[in-house]
Image 1 (spheres, helix red, strand yellow):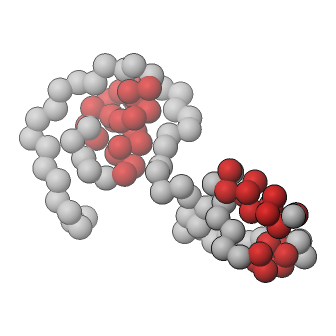
Image 2 (cartoon, rainbow, N blue to C red; image 1 turned 60 degrees about the horizontal axis):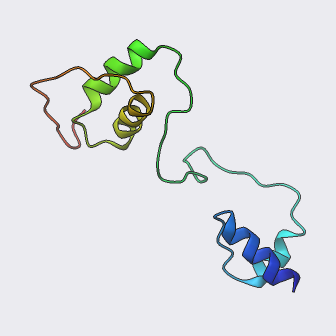
Length: 98
């Protein structure tokens, strides 16, 4: 019963528990270490804090035509704050270029 409740609560929180043995093993864990590569990301970057609305507006205006996920997060943050974006022209997206 505890395993069913644990996997159900995990699923509700967005955590996939592949098998009951993993959940039972987790009970013995006292430390978890994650690397810096984004192991715990949702796969959808988002802006969590930005203090200068004018800078965000300008950045979002520039990033609006980009396909990059970080650009999308900047544009979405400006949209949520109802910031008016400026028109841009001459944008060129070069995949894999530095």
